[in-house]
Length: 360
Image (cartoon, rainbow, N blue to C red; front, side, top):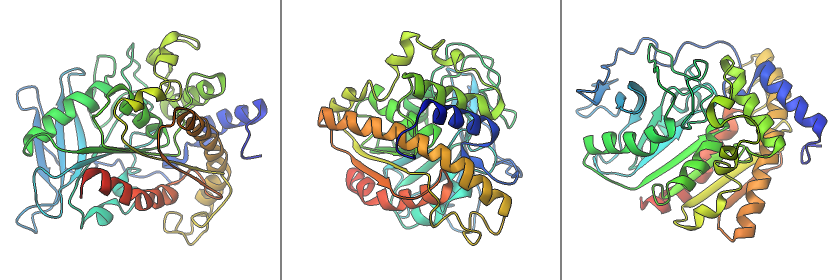
């Protein structure tokens, strides 16, 4: 039942998402990601500011960077870790968060061992904080429910794609020695976005990791899932992103339909999803659960349904890539829910592919 989603199953997915999850941030309420971090904010006059989080070493490895977005007229905060070898021009991996934008302590730095994992690797990691329900897209109209927190507001339509592919690389990389090899990875909502970004900007990334994303966004089933994900955190209306269902823009931005664009400059691709059946991280003793029975119940139920939906979408993308003969590492795990423990596993498993593509 986890491989084929019927109409009833899709309705259940929609209800599950709206009622409790994309379990990218399931569990007890957490503090805001940047609570207690006093960082200097970028402005139009000073478009890049970086605040070290520790000065124990001569060169602080972890910091909060603030990057000014001309298109949105706001600053965007991000968590940064510098490369182990201290090389300012080392490759960079951009890590995108799920449907909450990583705003509730549910980002790569706080929800996984990413900092420890990359600590001995010669790459920058950059995790933008913000973009709740945005799909990291360029929106048509302003939607306050798909916006920023931490006092970071934009009165303009969101331009996350413009920011991530043009403004952020130009500003961040220039501050650290100029252009370099890039990679990008995302989970859940951003697992959809990273494929679209690679398609729309050929050659920008040498490697792309999509963990439990839903690249099928224009079909009736995929559109229902996409709209539900946008609606859940605070009531965003995805019609403000690409128009009502059936609008041509949905097909123009659908990662499955547009997979042929990846042939122009094919990055290394890692695409994965699981069945939704409980696995090793769905136990009371798992560090992400830490004995919280309520969180475990939600992760197994809602997270199971959400991951089944992700596999449905990922299967569509996998078939399309095979038809186009575009190479990709595709992994369908026999067990696993829509939760951080499994995405941490995918980060570890996909590292050799990223390292090879980035030349590290």
